[in-house]
Image 1 (spheres, one colour):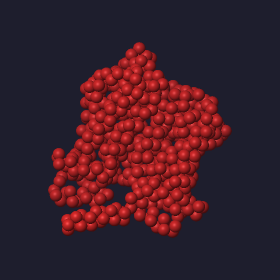
Image 2 (cartoon, helix red, strand yellow):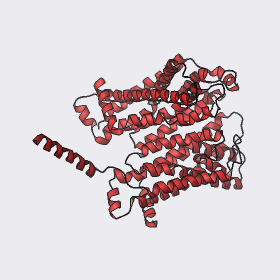
Image 3 (cartoon, helix red, strand yellow):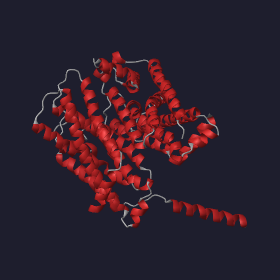
Length: 264
Length: 261
């Protein structure tokens, strides 16, 4: 398994999709800065500004982005026609999927650190007050924590759509919707139950508008439930695409039947 | 032109676009019906509440996002299969091909409006209300779908112009959709910042929302009194969006015409 994960990291170096992840993080921070411009007269401390970044990232773009990156990396094995080679080594589809999910998990953590660095850069460039070392460390852990938990929340979608060729785009569309509904779930007292927003309680997120404490047991239970669903999907995962060979076989079978029919 | 649109629709069969659009249109009615059943919609109830939520919140998010993905698939199809050269040899002008692809986006937008209408009726029935003003609401759904389909055309310029990967196009679409949505629903058009005022008077979602709010914000509520000075008539919204659409269409055709393969 370790060598499979190492291989995935080697492959990742080639993918430009990583840079799209980095660009996404930068744009989310810029969006938060842009929204800060609009909030007339409000003071933006490091905690306020980072909360805005965390919230925008969580409900607007992160679930779809990570589903897109993971789906793309998995689907590349099909588009580059390398899946057949991997399966004949033999590395099972399930093992490959686990390897890719772990590698993308590590990438999610790396993207969180990048998000944190961009937040700090924009924070200092804007001249906002209220910086402290303790606050900075807290923000770093909050960003890593929330991004990892929201990655767990979309893992069932990734694992499910990965099994069929080209279906990851539908998964990305769903992840976009899934993340956005978090905004409404959080506003209607379902923050701890809804998987995307459950991490907010775990990281101790406070924005002043919603319940700052939450129920940590409910949040953890919700995350564990999603992990269990992911485990079931991954455990039963296999490459479910209809191969070209099978299609050809089917078509040739039909042709033979047609020929026999016309011969009669 | 009709034949070209027919050809594009045939290509769609292979990609299951129509089912993708209907699937997307049926996602939001589920949480919105749950919200209405929970009684969180003030004076609006049943069908009117579900429909209002879908048209003002579901459509602005889902329709541009889905159409952006589909636009990338449509415009990259010839590049991926290396078929643009064959089409140009027939000869079919690139301007006509681009127009047919944009026409397909509008057809899918209308299918989305229809699916939204049907799902809000089902949601309304589940919420236990009578279905009233169906014709009027259907008209609003169609106008909203047409406006939001036009609103995605600036993104199509970038998709066609950069001619990069699907990933780039999808991320670009999501950002545009979210940025546009936040400008409208974050109430950013009500700020005193001159730059923000200018942006919220140009971007499609804030101006479409300012037209929709006349009908879908509860009169007598604090939100209504805040919004009232910013209400816009439909003709002004349509005019702004049409100008954006025409300029985008001309740019798309120009860029696509320069493409060789």
